[in-house]
Image (cartoon, protein in one colour):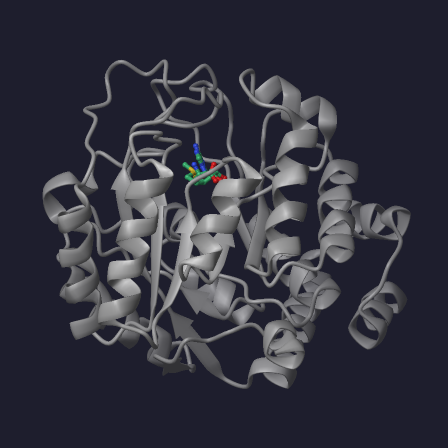
Length: 349
Ligand code: SAM
């Protein structure tokens, strides 16, 4: 086992079979070695810095019906909301005042936001704050839309591949196609976005071989960002009675992603913070280097419930900003409020 850990640390490479073997056989002592190697690798590429992004969850209306997700179209119990472009702009103003240099605009797949509305909004944000990076996370759209949004100023796009197992993907996404998700990710990359992919850990039926395939897919795609979080069951979904992912398994996957795609930006996700009070700090110590504090207005925040008991539901944006800064510092890292572009992107531009 030590031989494999040493090799992935030195070469940033392992086959699918080797990754599967490693995931199946890691002892607690091995995990500590793994986290330590991942931390050293992060420090080699990004130093001790942790980048902050302000997350605006601007609509919980979604046409898709992902089995795990609390805002799936079939969940009639969720109270739906949609922020107007003016309200989103007001969130950006607040984010800017709090020092954020990246605004992440995330939503369900809500087609009320037409190309025209989104283009207008992005142009307004860029006019007001030309130096700020805009990250979109709005799901699947036409390639032409992605191109228009990029042309008018969007910089980055987050779209998790969710799982690299075609069978599992199709079971979990009755309204979506495995190939389409990958085609979107390829199109976004081709257009020139900094792209974020990623997956959930602990999905029902997910095997270590599936998780190894997730990592191999990321090694092939070489995204700029990698979002990895535990699956957390939501009571109003068909997966309500499932077990969900563990903090330990998720931390192992964060560390492996750092070692296998070392130049990527990896968030310590809110889902990890929800599972464990120190979840995000533990992720930073296992190779993550981004945190995305929520700046969604407190009036609608709790309605963006992808899973239950999500942290920071009652907090105000300024509380989240300073709370997270203290947490990052006490974990031994340094907050960086710059744009925090990926190393891969900086090298190519
Ligand atoms: N609609 C956009 C998309 O599909 O990319 C962005 C919003 S989507 C709700 C954001 C992410 O939430 C998904 O990519 C998924 O991985 C995660 N998510 C949804 N339900 C979850 C759950 N029950 N537990 C953990 N993560 C979940």
